[in-house]
Length: 328
Image (cartoon, rainbow, N blue to C red; front, top):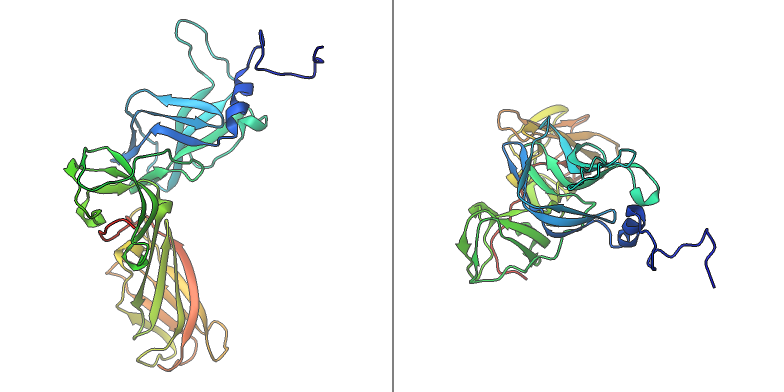
C-alpha cells in the first residue's frame, strides 16, 4: 500500500511540512487576533501591544509593545503584514526573515493560500491622525466581558456585548471591543464616551441614530454605522416657505455625525424630490464648520406644507459618542 507521487499526506512520518502546507491547514480559521495586538494612535504613529494573530494561516507574534510610524498621516491606510515569498530567508542561530515585514499600505492584496507570492494583509485600519482600529478583514480575539465593580488598569481590553440596544439614539455598541484609557474601578454603569474612560477599537461595532430640524422645521434623519453616515428627509414638511435659489441655514450636524474627514470639513449633499413629483427641485448642502453656512437650493418655490424626501451618504472620522448605561 502506498501513495502515488501526486498524492500527499503531510502529517505522516518523515514528511516535510512546508510553510505553505502548514498555512493551508490553519487558513480555514480565518484572519484572527488571538491575544493582544491592541493599537493606540499617538501623534500619528501606531503603538501596538504584544500579542499573537493568525494571518492567512501564518502565526504572527509581536513579543513586545512596538510603535510604527507612517510616512504620511493623510487619509486612510492599513497597517499589517507585507509578504514577498520570492525573497530568501537567511538561516542561522536566529533566522533573518526577509519574506515578511510589518508596514503601511493603502490597498489589501494577495492570498498566499491561493498561490500568490506577494500580499498586503491588513491587521489594523488607520484614519489619519484621528483613529485606529482592527481592520474589517480581521476577527478580533476573545476578550473578557466588562463587569461592574472590577479594577481595570490602563491598557486593559474588554468586550461589551450590547449597550443602549433599546435606544440607538443614545449610541449603540454591539460586540464592542474597548481599551481602558485610565486605571479605574468600574461602577454598575458602563461609562459614557464623554468621560474618556474607554476607547472603542472596532469602529464597526458602533451604531447611532438621531435627527436635526434642518431647514425651518424639516426633520433630517441621521444614521451612523461605523464611520458611514446616511442622512435623509422622510415626508417632512416645514414651517416656512422656500423661494427660488439658495437659502442659508444655521443648523449643523451633531458632533457624532460631523462630516469631517481627518480634520477637513466634508460638505455633502442630500437631494431628492418633493411629493409633487418634480425631480431634483431641491438640494441640501451640509457643512460642519460653524464659519460656513449650510444651505438649501430650490429650483422653484417650495411651500412650507410641501414634504421633502431624499437622502445622501458620506463618511466621518469623528469619534463615536455614546451615553453611559447598564449593558443590555
